[in-house]
Length: 277
Length: 63
Image 1: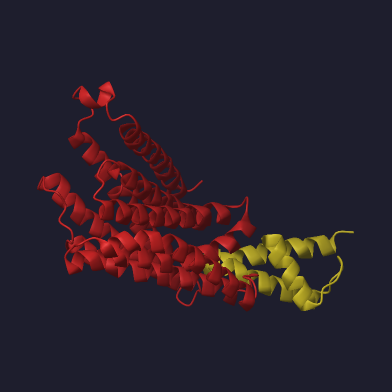
Image 2: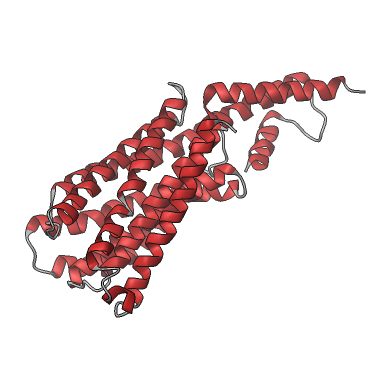
């Protein structure tokens, strides 16, 4: 095994441990908020805030660095290279956005303002990630993989749109109805809509990925796409709780984001492992 | 997926059954290389395809 592959494996193990620990801790806090461990001064709200913030940034940093590394290992002109460039850029935007939120929470001790500079990076990041997934889809089709006929792909897209509408109407209605400043309302609507758009290539790629079951390619893509699905869940839940003014379950939103970014990092690391092996 | 893709390529190239000629082998390896390049990049794919080609040549040479 090469040194690069050994380092990759060690980082992958660390990601698994961090992902599991942060998720379990925040889940326990959500389910048993009155437990002694949370009131005895050991796991204070400040500690949990650090866990929740630092449970995201390192994963996004890993995802950005390693997806850029993957980009550099695909020669110019290789079909998947554009997908990796866009994925890396999108993850960089998410990294900057989450770092901004962490700065407010951890170093200024303030509640994160909404909207904030972080939202600018998120709004740039979403189209980049969507374009990345479409670029991967295009490269699969160009390489001759059985991506399904045009009719089949349109049917899958239409099915996804129907699901989005079914989720979107009850989700977006309270957001529209709740009195809020225009920019805040725009962002609360924009995130779920951007997620719905991102969901379309995610579902199309998932359909192809299921045919790779059992191999390294499967591990890479199920982790990456699973990450996008958890991000979708996080955004939907965040928007819904924000509209209802509900704060008790905010750690659940953090858990979904931690799982999202952790899985994306794992997927990117698996691809690096494939290229290093 | 690898098997599905290979079967689809065989069908496109008119390969039926186990027997195939040199031209068909080269065409099939070319098609498989096109798929692998997405996951491995050009250089590594070239090495993998060359390994497959040599393994097939060895099979053909063995009695």
